[in-house]
Amino acid sequence: MPCENHRRLEIPVQPALKQDPRERIKNWDEPFLGYTLETAVVEAQRCIHCPTAPCQEACPTGNDIPSAFLLLERDDPAGAAAKFRETSNLPDMCGRLCPQESLCEGACVVGFAIRPAPYGKQPPVAIGKLEAFIADHERRNGGVPPPPLAPPTGKRVAVVGSGPAGLAVAEELTKKGHSCTVFDSWPVPGGILLYGIPNFKMRKEILQAKLEYLTGLGIEFRCNTVVGKDVTIDQLFERGYHALFLGTGAPVGGRMKIEGEELGNVFQATEFLVRGNLEPELLPEHMRGPLDCAGKNVLVVGGGDTSMDCVRTAVRLHAAAVTCMYRRTEAEQKGREEERKNAREEGVEFMYLTVPVRFAAENGKVVAAECQRMQLGAPDESGRRRPVPQPGSEFTLPADIVVLAIGYEPDDLLEKTTPGLRTTNWKTVRVDEDYQTTRPGVFAGGDNVNGADLVVTAMADGRRASAAIHHYLTTLD
Image 1 (cartoon, rainbow, N blue to C red):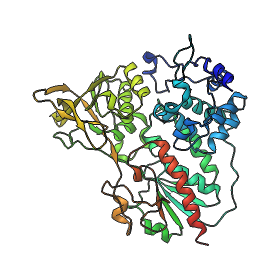
Image 2: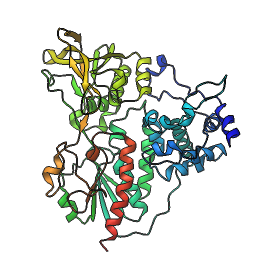
Image 3: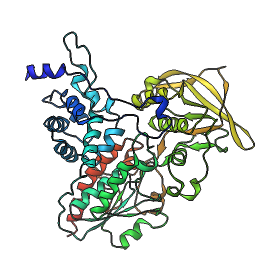
Image 4: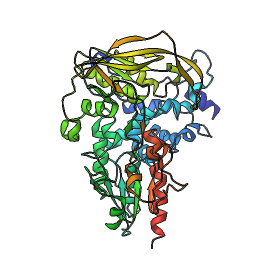
């Protein structure tokens, strides 16, 4: 095996071909053009199949990455896809959306292995892009095979929210013979996967194929329904549901609490993204209307992946200048490095150690941001150095449109309308080790439990919660 590993370490990385930035800003397609089967097989051969598989340990769902890549090497992409689907409901999405550099690829031994000259340092195996390729290949060659379904149990489960946690719960419980209905407040299902992810990060056809697959399993989707307002949890139990799962995410955008935040053309990130990326018929009435960025100065406040989605959307909406403003340095940013690189390639300017302190207006609309420079002080509760103002560093930045992408928190509607349901001081739902809330028969997982996090962590919560719900349902017999 040492000789085999030595040979694998000499295999050159397969280039991830991308659209030229000058061309891709004219469309909404994904930058990465994709592997061929031949180049995907070669890239998979770079995996040295570590006995301890640190990449698998770093994956929130525990994907058996080495086994999947070995199947791909053996010209069995369908088997590789099946291997990923043993532990993941959304491999084509996670392959695109996960921060692999801090998860599986960050743990990949190939990325820091010592090689003899002239090979030198090489990047880790492109685990995310290979995962996406394998799932895409399956979808384009017959689709995901229908799974075996257990006999109907007669048990009904209401799933609130059709994001990654809710979809995972509904799929896993349906396989076990339970009847699942997914409720969502948006006009069409998909949650954050539809309304928060632009096409240039993940094509809508991928989500659409997943929803069609789930509908084919017998899962029902009911949209334009706000649980807690249009129907309460108590009423769902009265209608014959035996258990509920709350996968409502963290939909409430953060506020800066500064003067001018209420002005026209100051948007929360979600509204800006959905109005910029989706057809009006997919939106609720209050979000419909023109979003004119052409020739405008667009300022996006925040440094995470959502802010990258916003700046890259603004570029494609023909903004004259797009600035991403972040109060710390790039070293403290939590978002994906690849997304920042894409944004820079597309002409976005980054302004670090800076915050807006007031938005100025003309005729009720924002025209400028009054800003202040910052410097890093002592670490805060997150472990990152706290930004503190630099006296006398104030300046004004023209801004015709401002987008606030400074974090999300859960909604407290369900707590207010559900007797016995308790939340924390951070508005997250209280759950025990089995994802059961303080209300019997009601389970929760994902961002409404953890706070705003990753698609993969929400999906992993959904898978684990589904096992707990299944066990709970068996106790009702």
